[in-house]
Amino acid sequence: MNHYDLVVIGSGPAGRRGAIQAAKLGKRVLVVEKGTRVGGVSVHTGTIPSKTLRETALNLTGWRERGFYGRSYRVKQEISAEDLRRRLLITLDHEVEVLEHQFARNRVHHIRGKATFIDRDTIEIEKEDGETMRVGAQSVLLAVGTRPFRPDSIPFDGKQILDSDDLLDITEIPRSLIVIGAGVIGIEYATIFSALDTAVTVVEPRSTMLDFIDKEIVEDFSYQLRDRNMKLLFGQKAEKVEKDPAGRCRVTLDNGRAISADMVLYAAGRMGATDSLNLSSCGLEADSRGRIKVNPETFQTDVPGIYAAGDVVGFPSLASTSMEQGRIAARHAVGAPASDPPQYFPYGIYAVPEISTCGLTEEEVKARGIPYECGIARFRETSRGHIMGLDNGMLKMIFSLKTRRLLGVHIVGEGATELIHIGQAVLNLKGTVDYFVENTFNYPTLAEAYKISGLDAWNRMGELHQHVAAAQ
Image (cartoon, rainbow, N blue to C red; front, side):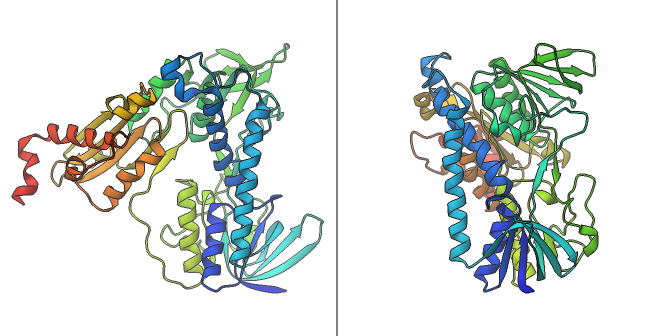
């Protein structure tokens, strides 16, 4: 039986980053991946596919140029599911090739197969040909990710009633789509298909969506969606999903209302992919959604030597944070020092339009009783926004009146997930409103919105607060 310093189960963002980090420290590392290719959910059904689909949709529809040429403008008149899939396969092949090269370059061993705990130190691997083998592990990193939650009450068929994994294999773009669930995944796909001119209805039992995002940003985002004729049915629960005699999908809501569409996407939650690990044999237990509890500083589970990172440990479930979690867990697992991650990390939602946020929301600032002021910039106020034909998009910053420090930055609009990193850097470096007022930004760029927003806040602070820094 082969023995390894670290056995990593799963090759998504957390798994691959953890494995490569341990290998760079000279440790013997094995990665076990049950999928047909390395990369995990992130590469094959999650992060990369959805973002590739988004980019393809925006390019082929000419979405970004409609501000100039009108809503009827399209780069390709007839867009097929095959058009979307062609670019997706090219992107996925590249991602897998890069990852396999990283494993080879860093001498990380990897095996295709399903891993199961025999005990704390022993893992059995069932290969695709049915052969089994066992390996010993000094430490284990669980990076198995999640899969779509599929309740028994939903008659999934992989063709018209789908989960987010099934959606990548559709053969035809629907004329109408009902999305059940207004979480990140549901909203991303809903807006992508809306950009493809599919009539989209979103059903959400809660009265709001994206509650962790600043309310003002969500309100602006919701306005943009409704402005392009998306239906947002909040406070209404999908009680029944079925097919009608005509072959269309019908969703009955808890208020008795029935709505129909060509296709239904069920995107109400995900489950940790832990049910096949036999966790009880090593003293672990997952919660009702298959997630594993960890120490948030080291990512060690309740069992010494066993770690978990990525989506399987719950919020924030981002590829970016999962990578850092995997790196920190691996360093701790092999006895190497690991520094704490920065206090603030960016959150990106790749909808159409994008949303990105970092730091405190206005609601959180109010709850903490911090005296504050906000600055707002609209993308249409920038020259770059005019050049790009942007009618929408905004950047909001929140500053402490007492210290003048930036508390949070929130963006909705084109390029939000790229622009956020300027605010992230200022947040983690404890910068103040003065940075944005006094700094020079490239002209013309959307980044100028930071200066506009900073000046807006500075003006609203009043003369007393403007000269606090000088007095100190």
